[in-house]
Image (cartoon, rainbow, N blue to C red; front, side):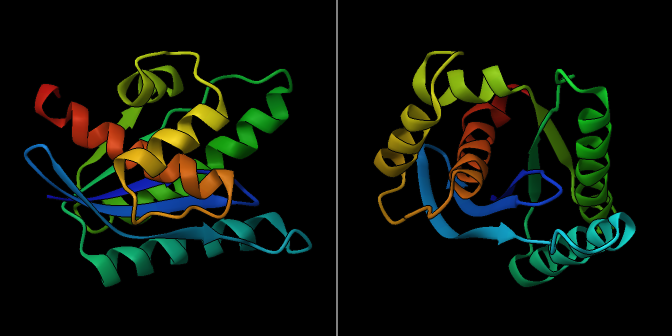
Length: 157
């Protein structure tokens, strides 16, 4: 099964593609979609949509996993982040690829056995579980973690 993991964000949308077969995991690719901050909001959403659409075309994932966003201190930030997340989900759903959503604590627990793991702990586990992966940003590492978490939990959903 090929999994596309997405860590949504308006300025940095991390993505990762892994193959999962039983207990075997293989790193395929990862990166970050970077809409320019100076662009109007709708154009940044369009860049996320097109970027995720291109990933689906290039890598042909069987499933997608994406992080669920919770309310931040600033409700406006939460709303904006939710719209970036929606742009990514629609790009995937538009290709009839099933989308699975996970809370951050479940992703962390699936990788580290601790629901409150730090970014550093997640990054270390990503590198242990997928030595070929060399994430350059936290968003990319998070996307790999989201894909790995789905590969671990897919049999239960």
